Length: 189
Image (cartoon, rainbow, N blue to C red):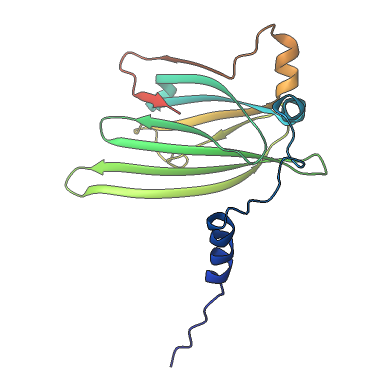
């Protein structure tokens, strides 16, 4: 016989609803900081993720690429979406800075492929990548290349502190993107 265990979620929700219904909102004004006070903290923690996504055919012939740099903070993901005629790839990269100074990048991928005579297949991946500032790594959302006959997708990644970028530029841009291809798939974030 299966034993079911229930967790007391409802009383917590009811207590929150009672505060809202009764109009008793906690005084958060004393705890809140102004936007001007928060911005320096975010700037110090901000990270730039440089991404170069490529579709490469046999013999390493690049048929499409897109380069972008996106600003984020630790724990907040940056996404990349590639849409082709028979494939959709959605990838999210979330940087984390450990107290010991080691960086970790969590890569999550979702892939939908329309395979002739089989229909649409779905695959998901998740990988934790140790990564230092300035170091370049490659992420292969479709897996590593087994044979040279098939096209594959590779995403080159690098992390760098935002403050470093800000000191090099007079007017920082939160996102820059470029794409080149004779028949480019859509890339969006």
